Image (tube, rainbow, N blue to C red; front, side):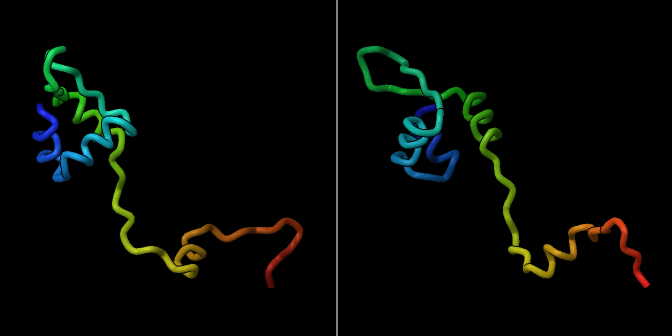
Length: 81
């Protein structure tokens, strides 16, 4: 895939793809040494995407929800009456 095709596949700009190549380990290869034609293997792109896939956060939990999700702490030596 050309870098333009990668940008279209990722729904981002060409400049963003270049940043991902330089900073985030997306590995292109040069098609020829004389030109400036770079390509990315689809399998490499899919693996790169899978390694960076993040689940959506959803709504942030309130302090009450976080405390309710935790198991109650039982202290030794104390009995509840």
